Length: 370
Image 1 (tube, rainbow, N blue to C red):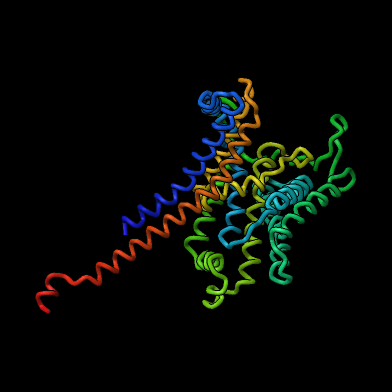
Image 2 (image 1 turned 90 degrees about the horizontal axis):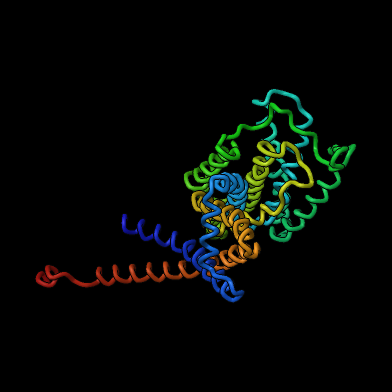
């Protein structure tokens, strides 16, 4: 059993390591083709990314990436492709900011209300795609893409002066009402910039994700449906119900993505609120193999690459080279996982064949008795 567990861990680590290595090789070739020295570029990235202020930036940036990866991973475990995390989290952050700005109650009550509002909005928006899938057979890929666009339209409609938005006369920008000072979440003070306190809640979300999907009957049913709907249904699992619940949970997790920015930084929702985090979560979840620890590593790696791009730009390198690295890693992830999967299957088949051969070969004692 120990040997099997060791092999499984090694195979689990092989795919992301191969993916990152493949991305670096492709990037090195691109740099060489453009007349740049790749090892110097990698050294600059490590040096700039290792600075204290860069480390704070990476932690703050990785927090929403991690939550986005968890949201996507819930769908992946169910064999669902939730591309709508971006729209779900932005809509959730918008209404949570509107609710928080309209209240004036103690922060110990207001912060949970804001977070729960965000989770409820994200869950409700994702539930639309789940219901459409089980009642009309609409692919969640198509429905969530459309819902992303609709979410942007809904936000644009309500984020106007006189509705849920207010216009700043100095900057002429429109945003929700600022959150009261009492509802600002705590930060961790460092020598440079503060680390967002919501990183603690992101870690707790990862623990809950691991426990629910790995240590509960619900998580077993969810993974069973993801492996084979027909087999799960034969085992008494309500597949249609599980699809809707999985989308709801994925949307609720997506609602947490914007909370670090809202509660620790911006304290309001405006047109400058970050976008595209939902799509980053897809790459992070793939790189982390839907494992909470792996997703955390993937989120940190993605944030590190984005931060280190500034160091490259200062030295005359094209900032877009980091995009090449990220794209190459995503492509390498798919290839590496497939290679590792095939190797694992081949290895298991050989082990089973060896055990069967050993069982069918008579021992010396059996030959003497015969």
